[in-house]
Image 1 (cartoon, rainbow, N blue to C red):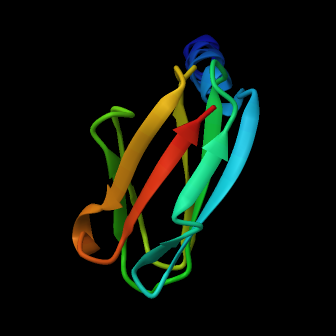
Image 2: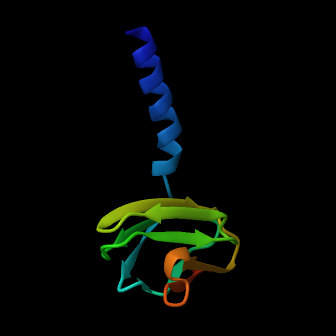
Length: 108
């Protein structure tokens, strides 16, 4: 029982930083396109991106500059936490549909 409680406490401690952010934004994937294709956020803050994949097929949110990648199964949501970000542009794309799934996060 003690080991189970320790594991649960460790899991909660690890998950807490992921859930905390200074700003939340939502990104929708529909017809293999990100909407909005341009996300504007405040610079120097931790950003939580909620990705809502409305397509039946999975998509992988990826950004080399944000150092983030996450596969979002079809008809589900995923979460990516980035930052704090310096002012600038941070392109992202859908690796499974790179020709159509393009976007940029702009920290101002």
